[in-house]
Length: 217
Ligand SMILES: C[S@@+](CC[C@H](N)C(=O)[O-])C[C@H]1O[C@@H](n2cnc3c(N)ncnc32)[C@H](O)[C@@H]1O
Image 1 (cartoon, helix red, strand yellow):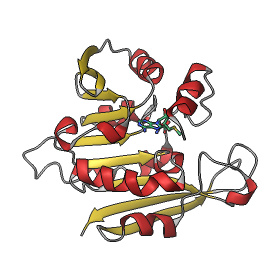
Image 2 (cartoon, protein in one colour):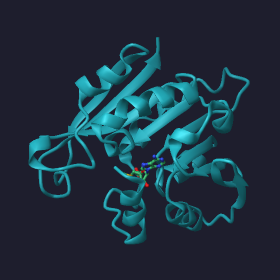
Image 3 (cartoon, protein in one colour):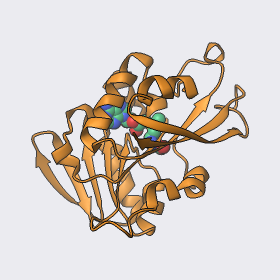
Image 4 (cartoon, protein in one colour):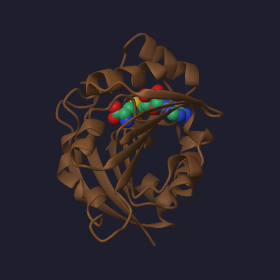
């Protein structure tokens, strides 16, 4: 999608993808991201690509971890901090604005402009509605960029599978085959869950939630 597509969605508040209560599948499978920190001298630091204003950031912060987000829309990030009740510092960088407060840092701008140095020492990636937000021609570029800037940190991916002929994306249908085609060379992929998406996708088509754990080979 063009950047203007997403900016327009946020301007018009057409954000059906946003979950006011956060995502229950994150809470269920968070051990993928949160375990292992005890043995490490580094803090757990979770990267949330294409983060929007997800409430999952509040939940991750409540677990005592650091969170780094990347999001195109400043509207989203202003609302994210308002809803967290946190007044951020805002710094201008060569890649755009960086909002920060306590354990949370969010880069406002195109994720493809970020480097490994920008995001710091990432211990896990939480991808909910990020991979599925991207059209197929961008997914390989996204996957390799994500692996590069996080040094192949483990990932928790929450995606949808449905009949793409029945609905135009986004979100696009991203199934096991797609995840394997993007990541199988670099990661062992474990499917943690396949479950019915209650109410269907946008209330229109039957869909399933798919949850994957990716661990670097
Ligand atoms: C489907 S929404 C998902 C948001 C969030 N992950 C959630 O679960 O609510 C996709 C988000 O990606 C953002 N986005 C799209 N392309 C982007 C890019 N190239 N760089 C950074 N953010 C982008 C959009 O503005 C939008 O907020």
